[in-house]
Length: 607
Image (cartoon, rainbow, N blue to C red; front, side, top):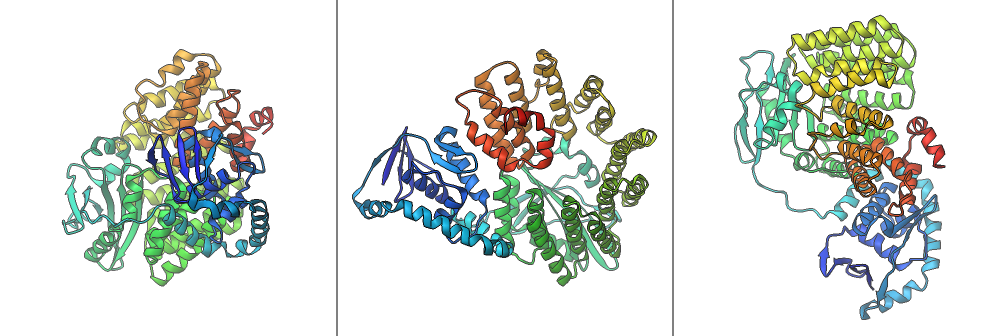
């Protein structure tokens, strides 16, 4: 059947979409969802309905439906598909359907559409019991299959990979890590930088280098008990790729690193902006293709953590632990235990989490991995905080700082000290919160950190301040110190707080001035533009910036910001806004914590 609506034409047989006569790209499953909605415009389809009829026997998450609906709205406008709270989705645009000769049989089948929908619903309910039991293995396969269907695989680009590298940090300056060009890589050394400096100045240095060197490799190498360990970071335009390799000696460890870096999934993630489900699908495929690569499995496990899928994250972390034990890779046994602990902490199972952390520290001690021991102790300090044990907090974080100092890891050392300052504040330890913040500031200056790191100090003073008026001068100082690195996390957060404060006081000139010189197109900056347009009663700009913010936040996997802007949109009474879509998003995605801090706004909108 051929459907014509607005300027679009869609053939439900060939799944070809056109706009003004020109072919328009549409993914296979999105086209099938569109077909279902167009065939039954009088039906409200739940997620289970769509999963049953589009994906049929394939096991996929509800996120697949949400992503397809979101992408279709991106093509046809938010008003094209209406969300009915707790019911589902329905097509809204007026259509003109023309039957073609080769679709007669299909039209006859459509006479039984009500029975088909009912049967699909029944089947969907029956599946739920066994799906819950089988999700662990099947979900991974299904996500990968879904992604492959939506994005048919292409031949792997055989072009040489251009990577710039910064000389690695080593235990001895005489043990230099060299990278030679071969059929896979073209290496360029950035000799004027060293890894220790680059890792604390990347927010400033990388943008200066990125146009010439979009991929920059840095890392450290050490030897312990006749084994060589390399920690590396490959920095790209859209992400960083971190990992750890083990070798019998320096040559073998370097060989293992190059073997890993030849995996194309790394460059897909570094060179393209990808939404979390797409990243996860890419990693799932990569894991299936290289099941023994512990770095890829670790990143896949972490993707489940970042998406809040705790049960799946625990399953994958356990799988990582077992695989690392088989490969006798103590580092990744410890990493797996750290991730298991993180899941348990999120579930507030603190005693079990502490046990996992203790085991992780034991693994890292076996290979004298001081930085990872420091990481585990920072994680332990949060458990100590939840158990209201300040003496334990202090011991954990001071030990973490000491281990980082011994490892010459300046960033980890300062992270431990500034975190101790914050937790001292939360536990009403007035002397300690200032003492350890001053100690961190002193070390930043002694280590000659770039000035934007010093912005962390006034940022913490802003945390300590009791009123928004008292916070303002500290937040302004943060922005000033980070002038050359406006996307530094403390600067972004400070601009947001200042924008909200200025708008609440009707200081719109000051609010406007915050955006001076901000050119980077990000979700955070789009959100500030949204707030400002709303305060200036510029409806057209408000809607444009709000929709852009939501799109960017979704792509970045920033759930909190996605919810914030959805709530802001729901507060407007403009007919151009698809209130049902954003309210349904809030109902589905809003966590208990987010709901608590936005309780008044939600109640006022009956959400």
